[in-house]
Length: 111
Length: 114
Image (cartoon, rainbow over all chains, first blue to last red; front, top):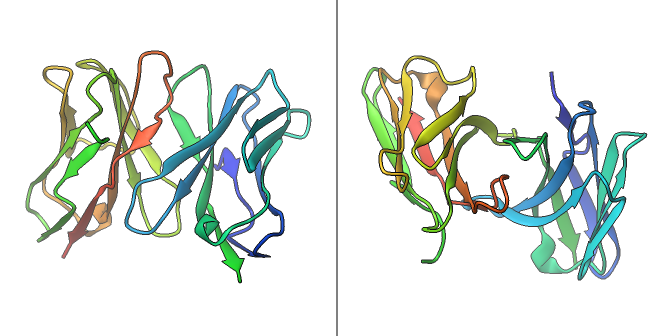
């Protein structure tokens, strides 16, 4: 019973182009959503978050979009850079509690 | 204080042995979380503390698992009578009082049970 789903195990994007990572969730009680980035042999690093009262949050090259009616969120990275190659985890929480992670999407930025 | 520290980074043990991991959170963070990650999966929640109180435990945390945070600072996670299925990366994270969700993760302890 996966409450947070990342259906694309991997994604390859040309350097300089836009990377779009997608995430779906099933629990309508989730009110806070996060994206983490993970390099090999390291723990996840918090990237960006969004509250359910918003539909967009932007931080530099990273923008997260939330579509509550579709229970869908996406992370846009533009322009993509080589250092963005990593595994990206979508996560969600209910009432400021523990977070539930998706399985992750491995992003490859191609030169 | 440079972040969340976990010790050891790697642990190899034989089935049936007990192991203990340590996590030192960022000093001003009052919440501390333990997660477990296996290959190809996202981190799975195990338990979390607010100060020294253990507020929630996942059903993944069987009776062989115990976590403590005696003084509200560092935490330990002990696994008794390890099984091969316990092989995973054990991640610790912490967060400040203003934000409940885990913000900063340690590099994890990779456990291999032979």
